[in-house]
Image (cartoon, rainbow, N blue to C red):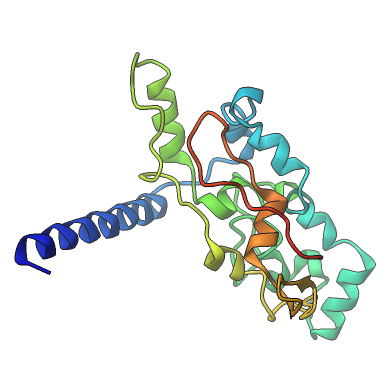
Length: 211
């Protein structure tokens, strides 16, 4: 590789790294706004009805799952001192932005909202501000992604979908080669995918194997 090619590749890598670092910093500086604010723009049939699709997932019912008898059994086996709907150990993965130490709920995020948009995409206040400005600017760029919104990946999911959960089943998913796994990103993503058809995307993952 000659020096010119090396400089070009290095610059490209630096730009990509900088882009993701900018998104991370923006997400850290932003504040939570709640899924109802997301619904204002992300529930149009022409752009994919992301909010409606979220409502149809188990994420939207995650808090209710803590009120069930199985959840109580899991909490008991795990030796928790409080019922699951009050235990930080459970709430941190069943409700958005819960204080992992105290189990306190975020003032802008009712527990009934469960795992909503900002659990995966990060706090949305800056994205919301951008959207409001763009409605007033003719010909403005249609999106601030990835500047103010995080794109979740497998690591995002694994913060909760892992063997620390008392409900973990190591054979929940059947992979393409016939082997078993407690989590498979490709299959899990297919259950919650909510792309905007007006934008260019990689092909949506297909739900392969058996769950």
